[in-house]
Each structure stands twice: as structure tokens, then as C-alpha cells.
Amino acid sequence: MKPFILASQSPRRKQLLEQAELTFTIIPSEVEEIVNEQDSPEKVVSSLAYQKAQDVFSRFPSEVILAADTVVVVDEKILGKPQDKLDAKKMLQRLSGTEHDVLTGVSLLSAEKEMTFVDKTRVYFYSLTEAEIDSYIDSGEPFDKAGAYGIQGLGATLVEKIHGDYYTVVGLPIAKVVRALKQFHSE
Ligand SMILES: Cc1cn([C@H]2C[C@H](O)[C@@H](COP(=O)(O)OP(=O)(O)OP(=O)(O)O)O2)c(=O)[nH]c1=O
Image (tube, rainbow, N blue to C red; front, side):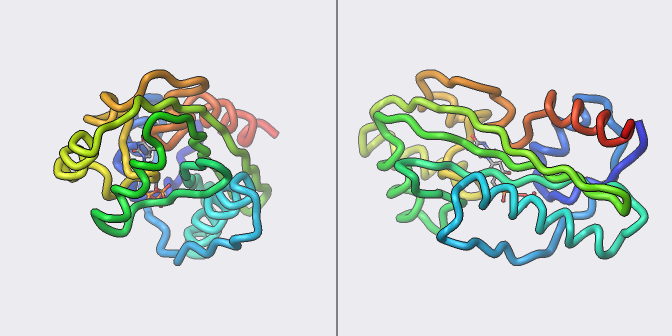
């Protein structure tokens, strides 16, 4: 498959694309992520993925660019990355004992065409005690992750079950991405 640019600094996205044996280089986007509070969560993640792709595309207009964005949605409220310990605690308290959606938007962009889609996975959390939340925050894991947890790390111990693609929670629905790339290159 034709090489592309991954417009992301996320080590998880890099690792998943390597696992799929794809050829790519990494040039992270530098956009300040602009969110319109009135938009639906689907619109927000697709627009953020598109903004990131567009930013790198403007610097490399002859390349194919892949970008993504992940958010957690609970009771229609979007949770991004926590700002600090208190913010992480509020997010984890909100997720404790209930279910939420993780949405990942993916954007593919080239001079010829563009393709953007959103994938959604439902995640069910166990009820967490305050001590569990505090010790999870002390692990440092929540801070670069939407919703203040990482299902692929220690955060695995907080999750009772999921419905949907595990990789969408980690930040890139890899099977759908591979299929989208094939379609993108064939049309
Ligand atoms: C819910 C959840 C999120 N995450 C991560 C995926 C994303 O990397 C991150 C959400 O932030 P994003 O803004 O989607 O991505 P990023 O800032 O890491 O990278 P870039 O903008 O350069 O592409 O949260 C996990 O790793 N595990 C999880 O279980």
C-alpha cells in the first residue's frame, strides 16, 4: 500500500499501524483543537480528526495524511484529557459504576479526495472506591488519555466489559482504518 503520513504523536496509534504492517512516517499536527460546544460528539471527533489532517496536509500537500481523535462521552458530555489530578478524579468518579461511549474519529486526506468516519465503542466500568480512583491517578496513567484512563494499561482493571472494537478505545479502529486506506487508494 502507498506510504502515508500519520499526523499524530500518539504512541498507541503508531504501534497499531505498525502491527498492521503499514508503511508510514510521523508528522504530528500542531493545531490548537477547536471544539464547538453545540456540536454532537460525532461531529466534534470527526472535525478534530479533520483539523489535524488538514494541518499536516497544508505542509505536505502531495502526501496522503491520516489523523484521528478520541473522546469519551458520558451523559452526552464530552471528556477529553484531564487537566490535572482533580479533573482526572472528577472524570473517573463520573465513569465509576456506569457505562459510557468512546468515539474515535478518523480522517484521510489527499489532494484528490478526503474520507472521514467515526467509530464508537461502549465501555462499562466497575464501581470504583475513592481509594481505587486515587491510587489509579497516582500511577500517572490518566494524564494523556481521554476520559482519564487507558484500557490497555492499569486501566484494564477498571473495566467490566466493552461492546464494540477494543482498538477504538485505544485510539484507532485499526481494522476499519486498513479497509478505509485500501478503499482510499483504489478509488
Ligand atoms: C479511553 C482511552 C483513550 N486513550 C488515548 C487515545 C488518544 O491517544 C488519547 C486522546 O487524545 P487525542 O487528542 O485523540 O490524541 P493524542 O493527543 O494522544 O494524539 P494526536 O492528537 O497527536 O493524534 O487518549 C487511550 O490510550 N486508552 C483509552 O482507554
